[in-house]
Length: 371
Ligand SMILES: Cc1cc2nc3c(=O)[nH]c(=O)nc-3n(C[C@H](O)[C@H](O)[C@H](O)COP(=O)(O)O)c2cc1C
Image (cartoon, rainbow, N blue to C red; front, side, top):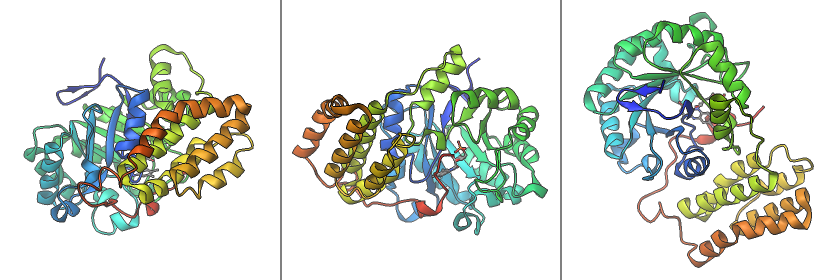
C-alpha cells in the first residue's frame, strides 16, 4: 500500500532526508536524474534566520523535483509558523520540523534534538506550524537525548497527537551523535505505537540494509542520508531491490566519474566558481571512494579550485580505471556540458538573485565519512 503524508500519496518508500551542506538543489537534481519518485528534502533552514533573510536559497526548489519537503528548525512557535508559511509559499509539498539535530550549536538553544527534552514546547511548535499551513507537517527526531532518556515512543505519540502526518526516526540518541550503530529495534517500538507512517533512518549503505531495516523495524519506509553521498544510484537500487528482489550492480566507475563531474559543474553553475568548487571537493571525493588506487586522485580532488581541475583529475582517474578507452568515454560524456559552461561561466545563477548563505557552519554539522 502506498505511504501517505496526509493527502500526499508517495510512489516510493525511499527518502533522501535533509543533510545540511549536501541536499541542495544541485544534489537533489542529481538524485532526481536517477530516481524519479523518491521523497526528497532540502537542507534545514533556520526559522529565525528567515526573519532577516526572507529569500533563503535553501528553499529554492526546481519544478520537477516533487515530492519534496522543506525542513525548518527553531524553537519559537510563531517564528516556526512564519517559516512554515514561507516554505509553503516556495512550493514545499510538506514541512518537516527538525527535532533531531545533535550539533551543540543548534541544541544549545532549544533547537533540534534539544526539543526532545521539551515535549510540551515541541507539541506547541507542531500545533502552531500545522495551524499556519495547508500542507502536511512531518517531524524528524532521534531515539532520545541519551541512553537514560530514550523517549522516542512517548515523543512520537506526542508528535502524532499534535497533528504530524509522518515521522522519521534516526535510531541513535543525541549523545551518540553518529557513533555506534543505529538501533533499528528501538525504531520498531515507535512504529508499533504510532498510527501515522514512520520512516526508519540510520546506517543504510546497501539495498540489503534497507530491507533489513524494513523487516526489523516494520517501518513504512527508509531514509538514506550518508549512503547517498557520491552514490545517488543507491536510491534506485534500493527501490528496485525492495520492489522486485533484484539487486542491481552499482554503475561502472567511469559512469560515477561522469556524474561526479556533472555534480561539480552544477554546483559551480549554481553557486559560482569559488563556493561551487569548494563545496564540490567533498562530493568529488565521495564519488571516487572505493576506486582501487584512487587515493592519489582523491588527494588531487580535495584541492579542486576550478572546473578544469576537476575535469583533468577525473579524466586521469577514468584512464586509471579503464585505460585510454575510459578517458575517452569520460570526455565524450561531459564534453557538451563543459563547452556550454565555457560559453557562460557566470557567477552562479543563485548569486544573480540574492546572497549566498549556508544554514549553519556545515563543517560542524556531522561527519560525512561513509563507513
Ligand atoms: C552532512 C550531514 C548533514 C545533516 N544535516 C541534517 C539536517 O539538516 N537536518 C536533519 O534532520 N538531519 C540532518 N542530518 C542527519 C541525516 O538526515 C540522518 O538522520 C543521519 O545522517 C542518519 O542517517 P544515515 O545513517 O543514513 O546517514 C545530517 C547528516 C549529515 C551526514
